Structure formats: C-alpha cells, structure tokens
Image (tube, rainbow, N blue to C red):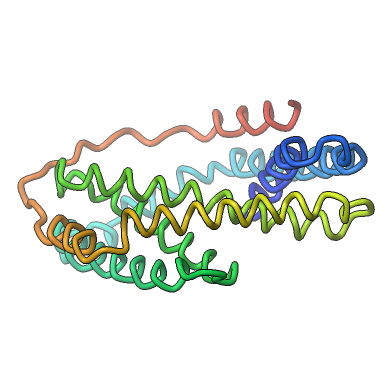
Length: 236
C-alpha cells in the first residue's frame, strides 16, 4: 500500500498542478512525471513477485483455515456488527465535532478522514445485515470522504511541492484551494451531521441487525489482472 500510495500521490500532484496554476508548474510536472514512472515500476515489480509466489493462494488458505472457521463460529457476523459498527460511528461523530470547528488544524481533519474511511468500508461490509436502512448513511459518508479527500490531497501536494525547486510559486494556489474545501466540509457537516436528529438517525439505524440475512460468497479473484492493471498504469 505504501508503494501504491507513492504512485497515487504523484497522480494527485499532477492533477492539482494542472488545475491550480498550470502556467507556473511546467518544471514540477516534468519532475513528478519522472517520479511517478519510477514509483510505478517499483510497484509493478513487487506485484509480479507476489504473483510468482502465488501469494493470493496463501491468503485464501489462511482465511479459509480451521482457525478462521472457529473464530467465525464463536463470533457470528451479526454479533460482530452490533459490537463494531456503533462504536466506530461514535468515534466518527466525536472526530467530526473536533474537525468541523473553524480553523481546525489539518491533523484533526486527517483523523476524521481515517475514521470516515474505516466506518464507511466497515458499514459496506455489514450492509446486508442492516438492509436498506443504511443506504442513506453510506451516501452521507461518501460525501464527507470526497471533501476530506480533497483537503488531504491539497495538504499532501503542498508538502511535496515545498521540497522542489519552483514549488513556492504554486503553494499559494494550493493553500487557497485547501481553505475552500475545508469551508465546504464545515458547511456540509453542519447541514448533515451536527444536529441531534442526525445523531439519532444513525443510532436508530445501527441498533438493529438481522440474523436472517445470508451473504453469497463470491469466488476469489485471481492476482494476474491486478498486475496487468498496474503495468498498464505504469506505461501510461
């Protein structure tokens, strides 16, 4: 994931440089394209080694082993959902209250972004046990994630650009963009999450889990397509 993140950071930098101040970013664009190609080659090399070692089969064997089955029998999925999801929702709202204050430091926004990501993907996993009642909650989370992601992207690229020659010319535009996204986030949070009614809605919808839901298991994906995609990305 660290290697994939290195590629993604360069993709984000290239996009924001183009959108924020294209006339001042040509040397930086060239530098980040070069760094992106190097990072992609490193990532693809690792993925190819994973394929040769048949790493996906090792994961499947571990996840389908006897110990995993014992854990599953001891902790039914609906019981796990009741324990995990409400706790993560409480953390999400606590982080949100801190991060939505005026002039909140970027560290608080980053912590909320992580909490939102963890809650959303966990809720996606357990959604069949909640039914249609959580569909609106999932959409709300996606909206918050999008805004927080834009803020984090700006902060990341500002750090990257500050270490390159000529980066000072682009920093003011990136800072203005980050402040604009932060204000949009605060407005969105105030409208969708700050009221007592919003908290009650989440609490009520996450209170009940159905034990009658049966999840259909899909066959495990093969590793090779992932390498092909990474290889295509590296050569783009």
